[in-house]
Length: 250
Image 1: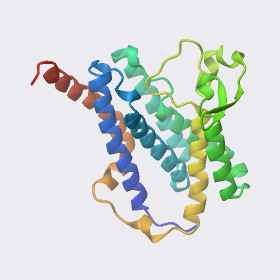
Image 2 (image 1 turned 180 degrees about the horizontal axis):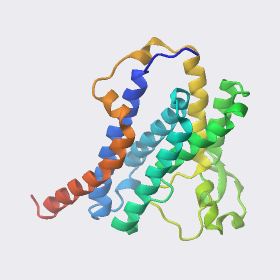
Image 3 (image 1 turned 90 degrees about the vertical axis):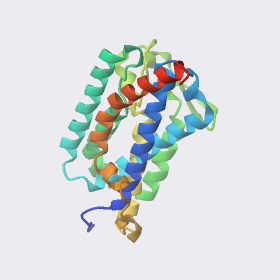
Image 4 (image 1 turned 90 degrees about the horizontal axis):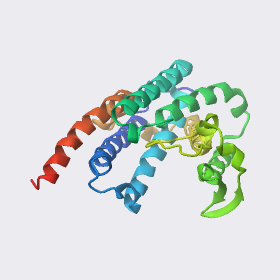
């Protein structure tokens, strides 16, 4: 398929997700790390906001696989950044450490999709999109030991899947496992693949709207990995200052 040098609207949508992510993490630090509102992230609207950010990032990343020129290199780079985030959080905020967060999910998904691309291309894109999204929905509660759909439990998974820490990355966390940003391959790989198949459909005959530039957000979207890596330390410092002011009643 013939492609322009850049689909600016995709950059803009990614940039919008980045802005929302930065805002979410800042408020997370204020309310959770500094204990001002421990139940903040369980509020319905906050939960919906957080999931919207995640879904946007993962779907756009799957779609953007088709636009990447150095997939293996990029996959390894994103995974390395994820490991750096894990190391830093273990040292700085061990109680809120990140194990297999969104960067590791995206890096592993990129590599797995690259490896499986010859097989994936044999699947009609519409069928692949529907099947991937359905599997994503069915495996949403795998980390809790069940296959479910719409809140209805369809099957319980065997307990032995959750006894080994080695299966945690696949969606089967061992007892006592905690992570403040946990995105295992099940179910999230299949949301990435839904984006991958959506990309095949959308980019086969790209609509002109994809070339629309989005000022500022487009720039943010093009530098999303760098911003992700630097935003959290900045958010922690800012949250510390805000929490101190709030505690002093300023």
